[in-house]
Amino acid sequence: MQPTSITVRRFSAFEDLELGFSRGLNVFIGENATGKSHMMKLLYVLLAVAQRNRSATPSEAQRRWEEKLHDKLAGVFRPDGDRIGRLVHRGVGRQEAKVTLHCGTDQAVGFSLSSLDRLRVTAMTATKVPRSIFLPTREALAMYEGFISAYENRELSFDETYYDLCKALSGTPLRGPRMKKARDLIEPLEEILGGRVVLKGGRFYVHSKVGEGVIEAHLLAEGYRKIASLAHLIANGSLLRNSVLFWDEPEANLNPRLVTKVVDVLRSLAAGGVQVFVSTHDYLVSQEFALAAEYRTKPTVPTRFFAFGRQSLSAPVQVEAADRLHDLDDNAILQEFAEHYDREQELFYGRPTAQGEGRE
Image 1: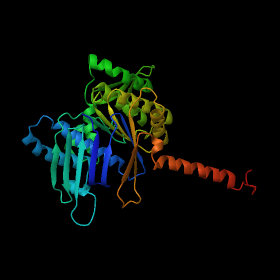
Image 2: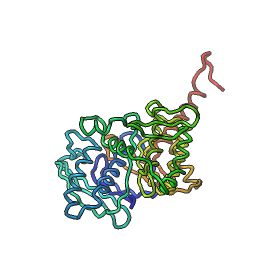
Image 3: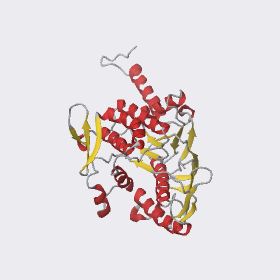
Image 4: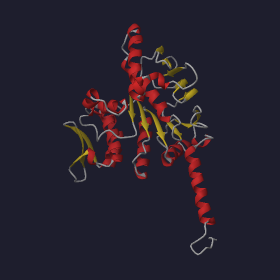
């Protein structure tokens, strides 16, 4: 049961929100500090904790939920001193956050959290929660070797999404019919990489198909390491039908040609039953998703766009949603590109030349 909606009251930068999600692609856009990453992390935390507790009895679940939820909120958001009450939207006096995630019509997970760190489970009826994967902005292949052990035994500055991702990457490839189904998604990624991703001796390698032999993954450009991570997660079954993928700024360190290919892969994943959440600042990424949704490019994928915005840094975040990007009134990416065009025109037509004459 994949996420269908969430209600958020006074959590992080959010004052009062209710969002409905697409079962296919969900694209978050907005300026910095508007809560895009926090929303994806909140969704990820709820799914990750519920997925681990799905076999618990009701009495066990209440206790385990609160323990696991506390630890996961602290590990993913990393508030000072693990004081998760700091995640409550700030205000005068004691405040309380309330969050409920709905998966289908009768599945829900939720909690309330006071600014005094008091956490209480308010809903835990979700028993068929899908596996979720969170890809942070920085890739993990280069740091993979020894990272899991180091994270478990040392204080590191990375949030828990990196630890979870490395554990997911540690899985061995599928075999049999499931691997055959995964091949259709893996092959376009291997074509980009020019080879096959292999985990050996605690390190990742790409076995080149073009005569370059075996290449250590950490010697690849960061953009290619992101693609290699995605290929391996598909190959080991972490990203197959009914799973959920969160990817924060997939465009980081990717050149435009790779960006368009990654968008195609994400759309293929969504068409194959993976629910995808993407946060982006990139014009090309958002427009590629928008064109595919507008003109129903095959594979046809249900898509929903979310514009996150706030009037000032102290104001709560507001979110506008639409099935088509151009139906959003507040599109920070498009607005900035329009302003860039205006600046170019102003310079072209209005700026004096070196001889003191304007251009005609």
